[in-house]
Image (cartoon, rainbow, N blue to C red; front, side, top):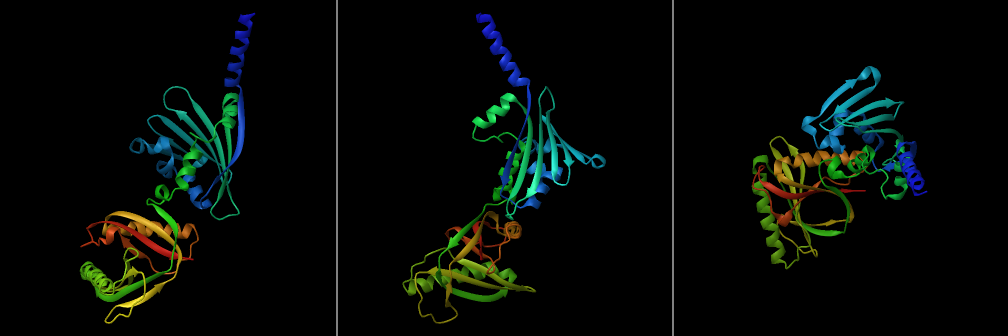
Length: 312
């Protein structure tokens, strides 16, 4: 009798492993539809987000078969075959390069009514055990390409290359100075401006309430117009070339950068892409803020800074 019970249990486990099951679900990716589509449709973009491919980027080979609307991505351990299915669908097969093991997925992208959402209709071929397990674990997409894609698309640091966050700033009072200088004198001028503003704050017994704000207003030929503001706790009567300025509270897009000062341009470009993707309407030109107000001596100086863009 016991033998038959053991045989029945063994037979049951064999069945749940070999019986094929197709499960379907909908995953929402909080990102622009076009960006999600391009991340899937361009084989070289897979290096940026798919774990198996990204971890072996130097050893990856690509093969395009445009006649059959498919491409292949082969790495040391796995091979992906991706075939277009309809206008926004992708049939994906993941196979181990050596040994046995294959996973099949179909992802169909649908533009959500919300601009920054993309619905992914997921169809996955699995076995009965995998089907039941998906209802028991918290993340039923764990270990699948769509999970990697979602994590990549929703993390600005992964997708845009920099940490970018949205904040709300309070109303501020600043003492400011502005001037037009030669481009090769900008760093020296900025240092002098900061020293002068601190001197004004000290003379008038003002408390500095935030990091200095640096703004490049315009550039013509070999000259640039610069404005620097030091946030303080109250307005005062100021003589000379400094003045008070009120800065209303607003939403802010903040990008974080560490590296050569001249390379901050890469962060500016990434933030412009973020602004375009998220349909953000800016209010003013970008501001630069520096950790401990440590300004660069030249374009090659290493800085720890933020780029701040007020927006509606």
